[in-house]
Image 1 (cartoon, helix red, strand yellow):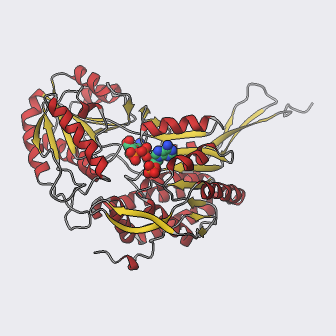
Image 2 (spheres, protein in one colour; image 1 turned 90 degrees about the vertical axis):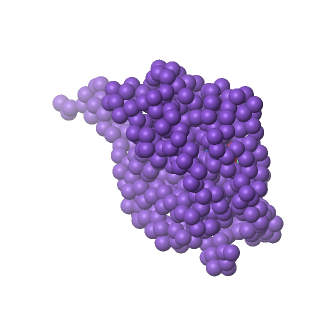
Image 3 (cartoon, helix red, strand yellow; image 1 turned 60 degrees about the horizontal axis):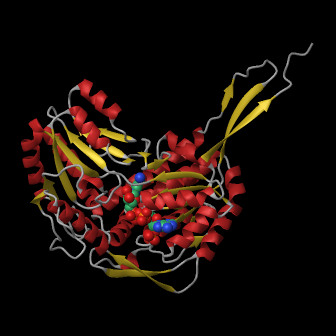
Length: 487
Ligand code: NAP
């Protein structure tokens, strides 16, 4: 049992304008591994969300006016504190989200890397000088922070989905308000505690925690003081929030759902493909937006891949994330598990076969067995929907053109993966896949240096890399006239 009293980063109320909100803590935060209450938080609502927006508005002029170097130093300190407290942050994350502790530590390092990255990138926000069409003018371009940024984030990466946005916003000179998912407020609050210890001024980074997503979301998407809204979550909710942002014409970026194909061609290195598929499918119990959702295997590689893949999946240890060696933790809720199981059973009714797993695991109510399905076709529910669980549907195919057509036959386009050695094929397939990110002979593609984001209904905008700042900057054009030569 974790001794909660030893967790100095365990905070239980919203952090607004550098203050921890007072109130009765009566909203339970539940550990998905055992369904027991970890702690209670003070349930914020519309009023506190408005206060947070106003705090960010008031803090903006001073934060924007700091030099990039000053902001960089504060972000750098925040990064260092995250890494110094990696173990404690990971413990809090595993308790509220369920992922294995080793993975949670990985998420903290991944999340912190964005803060380190944007501490540096913020110093490289360059403008431009463009040759003017007439001799007596000059065209100058400035890049300036958009202003107050509001964010709503999901439960599957309670730390990194916040740091990816907040670090870019703060590095660009914006102030920030985030409302994390109801299931995972504690990781967000722990980040606020470290932001405070790092010396980030009051009002620059605010966290509002509460259960009324709809009402709080309305404030964040419609308040006139918010200049930009950024969301990570499902495509369905994203569409609603984009519509809400239209009323005040906010700058919007969206990181939404995926349905990643993972294609194994005949010329693939099968062992590497098995390793890549395990990493991209079973991480976070299959609850990531870039998780492999459909595995396509070409005829010539099919038998060897299936045999090796099933053998490898069988080895995965399903257990409470706090247990040593756990590789697959619980799903976030019982209803999430029911949704996954329904996709499996509906597809079995349509002719899919269970090669491994296919049911609730003995580890507990919220644990689903590591599952592999064969004889799947691209029109079955398990292939059409984002699974968000530890289930691998395998679809057999014969030729390249056919698999590209099937891989692209979806409204979303976040991540795709394929394994092949032929260089011509690598270029053809990479160019033809309608996805924002492609892993070629690689199952893990996310890092702070790379532009993360999708096409089609997977969203708009990019997080990470030097492109990640663009969403937090406005371009201002200065036309300087009257420069003509003196006679
Ligand atoms: P979700 O239902 O869309 O929830 C995401 C966030 O939106 C939560 O904070 C949720 O609050 C809030 N929310 C829900 N309805 C809302 C409303 N009407 N107004 C304002 N806020 C609202 O998504 P999820 O199912 O929890 O998360 C998984 C989804 O996120 C998947 O589709 C996954 O692919 C996607 N995702 C995408 C990325 C990416 O970078 N593209 C990364 C991670 C996850 P409550 O918790 O209170 O419901």
